[in-house]
Length: 139
Image 1 (cartoon, one colour):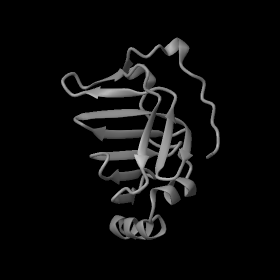
Image 2 (image 1 turned 45 degrees about the vertical axis):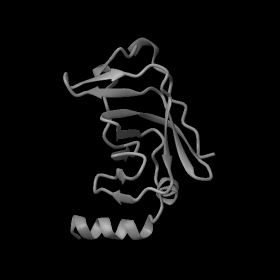
Image 3 (image 1 turned 90 degrees about the vertical axis):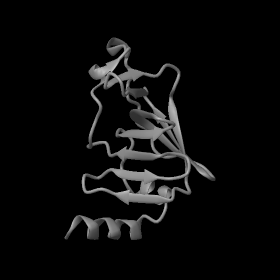
Image 4 (image 1 turned 120 degrees about the horizontal axis):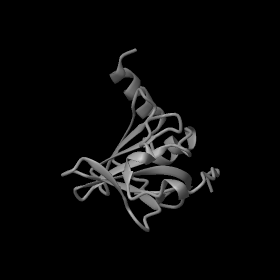
């Protein structure tokens, strides 16, 4: 099966962000969102699905500095919110969801066994006091 066929098949089965999130295991994975000229990324500790939104609660958050190519911790940022009416939702062959929509330029949600940002590569992140992962189910 080609990648294109696989992608089209997943699009048919996951016609909404909410359904795709509920059908897969992303708690313990990571979310990466590009918006307003910045890329943000962090490990997902919980996901909450409400009326029009999907909330991703993070253990910590970092942004990519394009000038230095480094990841830098973002203080006091503990989550990401996406509108459920994402215009394009694609499941990639590595298990991540790729999102494009009105709220973000692009986004990736990586499954718990997927691609991870090494906390040691995040400037300003206190490696001795990292939050303990407390994995909870959907609310």
